[in-house]
Amino acid sequence: MLIIPANSKFVMLCIAISLISATVIRLALQKKNPQKDYTELRQRIQSWWWMVGLLFGVLIIGVSTTIAFIGFLSFLALKEFLSITPTRQIDRRAIFWLYLSIPFQYYWISIGWYGMFIIFIPVYIFLIVPIRMVMLGQTEGFIKSAGTLHFAAMLTIFCISHLAYLLVLPTTHVEAGSIGLVLCLLILTQFNDVAQYIWGKLFGKHKIIPKISPNKTTEGFLGGLITIVSVSYFLGPYLTSLSSISAAIAGGLISVSGFFGDLVISSVKRDLEIKDTGNLIPGHGGILDRLDSLIFTAPVFFHYIYYLEF
Image (cartoon, rainbow, N blue to C red):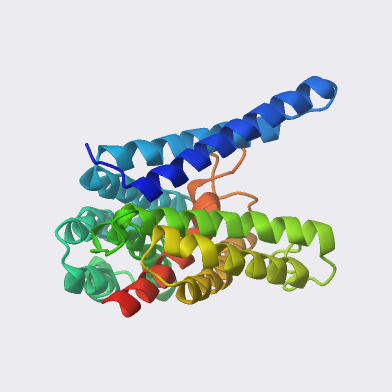
């Protein structure tokens, strides 16, 4: 069992207290307004309990278990993505190689083989998939299918796997450890979504891309950006070896990339004319609905840390 460093342990405790507070507030609201339906709020909070509980559980067990858990998230995300996007029946033989690439990608992470980790999906799998499709001998719809499978591999395997590689990066911040990197990324990514939503609700007037996400506003985006930069200025040095200025820059990168990650998955849903990517997480939708921002923030944050530290 992994010994959680002091700073990371304190942040995990704060998150648990926040969830307890949210639960108490929800119960108080329900008692005060029994006629009002709080089902969605209850589902969202319960889902957060499950997600946070699972994450904290695997983090406590150890790095290998956490890497395997994130690999399982990649599997679920890939499965969900392929379930909502149209593919040819014959492509199932090529899709097999996408699923097979998941244990390999996360094995490279577990042994810290950065060189293979960084090229396995965007080079080898990108070559293997169309080769397998060519061997099937069907050219109709070839380009569309190849693009769909490549896009799926990048989003659900390659991008998400950067979160796992943070766990094996050596860090000089002994009070937070490598877990601090993961917690910092997750907290800032999720808080960015909340901050942009709140600022948008309070002051949002100018829609950014209404055809894709009518609720996204310039005010919400800028408010979220300023909030996350400010929070990361203080949180970053507590959980990572970044200086306050470098942490603030990381916060800006997370805010912007998370914003576009949300829009990209929204574009996919708009194209497919669906509201959610699935119903795996009550109150949140599918796994991609919950990971949409993280898909973009994970590689951006990882390479920022890697550039500065290594």
